[in-house]
Length: 159
Image 1: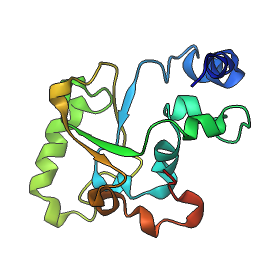
Image 2 (image 1 turned 135 degrees about the vertical axis):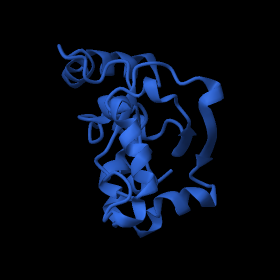
Image 3 (image 1 turned 90 degrees about the horizontal axis):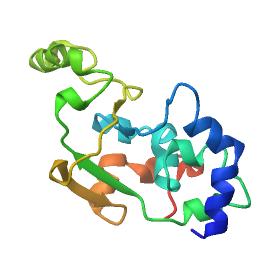
């Protein structure tokens, strides 16, 4: 990314609203897909695999002729498997005992894992020791985890 591209992003209304909002909703957070079914929900994850910078950056810029192709050209789609301590996860850590217990009665439940809309996030850096593996788009496991070859064409990932 050139200095001009960075200046363009920094000065844009979309970035100011996404990152600098009064609630801080997207500032300093890392978001996670908590289960494999989330990775198979094309409508929820295809954009993360297509553009660099996460939702706060690509929203409003994907179709922008000045920066969209630049964001899409940075990096390559990957799945980063992490193991983060429960107390570090912000929205759900008080409920982990109930979620853990539910695994024991999963056979009796209609839905055995959270739905695709279930998110996890943290405001702290993920330590290198918490990264279990990185699965690149070219790795057959990427397809196994996402089933992206079965997604509708408008969701396809083009690395």
